[in-house]
Amino acid sequence: GTFDIGSDTIAVNKEVTIKGQGKDVTILNSTATGKAAFSIQASNVTIENMTINQSDTTTSDTLHIAIAYTGTYASPTVAYSGVTLQDLKFTGGKYSVSVYAEDLTIDSCEFSEQGSSAILLYCVKGDTRITNNTFTQTVPNGQGFIYGTTASGNDLSSGTLTLSGNTASGGRCFYHCNNQDYIDTTTKLTLEIAGNEITGYNNKAIVFAGHSDIPLGTVFNSVAKIGRAHV
Image 1 (cartoon, one colour):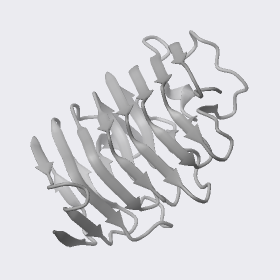
Image 2 (cartoon, rainbow, N blue to C red; image 1 turned 60 degrees about the horizontal axis):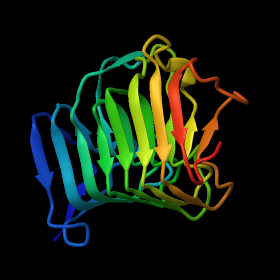
Image 3 (tube, helix red, strand yellow; image 1 turned 90 degrees about the vertical axis):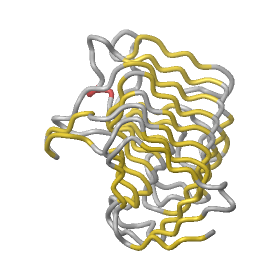
């Protein structure tokens, strides 16, 4: 059915699976403004098989799902691991998902008409997989469908980031890496970007903000890309 979940944030603070009956069957309508509809505050959380609508597309920090951090706003650190977002449909919102996480999976989801970027990758560790998703944006807004962003004092990203099997239409670019200065330069990050279908705007898969080139070995162990996955 369709459920109005109001303007409050639902805190998910224990290991749990929240499973709907399908994206066309279980529909949650949120009116949260300047905050997330769901805040994940635990490891091993799965949310799947539903649609989450956000009515606000303009207010900063309006999200569908936020994976919370520990520490202070000025010095946030990754706290939770094993989060899976699967077979979800996200409509509206300024953004959809903000990420401080280890071993994250976002798979087979639909992201439609966010006011800015769909996924904010503040800090990732371990095995991060963003696969088989669909991204659509009629009017190019934000910094890219997947936006690696951060701020001074942020935890450092590391591990493997896999972006594969996704379809992106419109938008400014597919993956905008604007946090290369906050990737662990010792362990680094392995980026695997392959098998994505990217159309519209400039057709670019990867944009490195403020850098004409990111030499391999500086922040990325390796970058694997094929097909239309070009810089």
